[in-house]
Image (cartoon, rainbow, N blue to C red; front, side, top):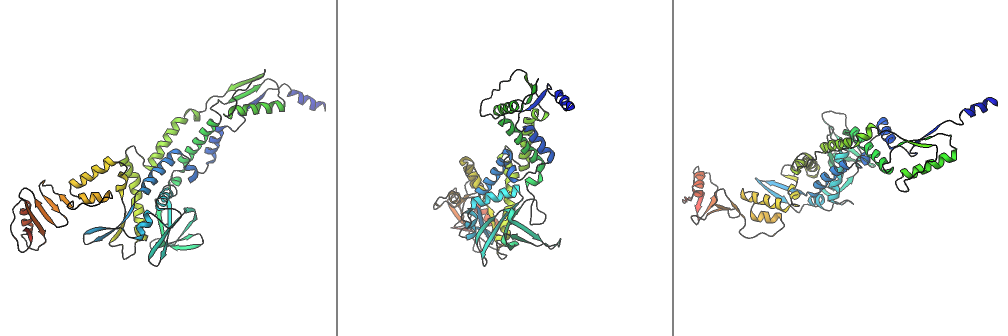
Length: 424
């Protein structure tokens, strides 16, 4: 017993050092995340402001653009307006998600997971509904043949043929699964997420400096518990932030770590790198070209592949109407219309149609580069105000037709019985 008492006496006046704050040190959270390689998933990635902002920008723009169906027939392209598939791609899908919501979530799935899926509900050859499916519920099955590839999809408890599944795949090699940003730059996103976690820890502690409490005498357990509780309240940033140190207690500040000193610089660099991955620029035109247009083309190919019958694929095609993105800026929109009219791409009535306005009789004319010459697309007639003459352009196999048409544009009109330009 004497030996035990002597051992106890050795610790009676020993110095007790207590590290603060008693709550979990935020730098430990960062270090632990980096060391153990914390897995980043879609939900964690979307907590990063740079990722959330980029995904919302791209998906919102793509969802805002309508998808139109066109028919190519004998050199003419006609828009098909009364097709049920157009209604589903732009309005009511038959799902709990409308067309805007569906296109937006498809884009998010495409960017983050690399896979966006939808199931086509058919009645014979007619598509009745489009159902959105989360990628987690889709299990693709590929055949082993490297050349004649074939894939089916197990969704829920049912197998679906490839022609019944809308699949939007990013960086795919097998035509069944893609590779998203979360997988491609997982380490960078892990670092950014850990940095955000570290900042959250600093906010929770009110930005108070870390350090150590040193006691000259050994403290009782009750004194230690009270001291820790007072220190916890100070670092909680929601109560009193004053702690009274009794005689014999000293606070020793710890130096800032290299992580803290480089935190802001590291955060800015990570945000720039993430924006580069999503191709976000200050110039919107460049952003559209690099970030949005490739996704539009990928979506267009996927839609044309499964939503058109084999007999339609030769003459029909779906296309995003990119003109919708300039409607938010009236100045840019009307400048584009003016340019299209000046170079002869659009008539006044075609412009009015784009603005959901009624046509005006006589406004289906296109000005030519010769400022005085007008061409009526309805009657196929030229009118030259300088000579107050009209001429009709007619097709002919006569070798002199081209020369006579040129003469008509120059105001030289000659009667032609076989074709070419005829005086009216």
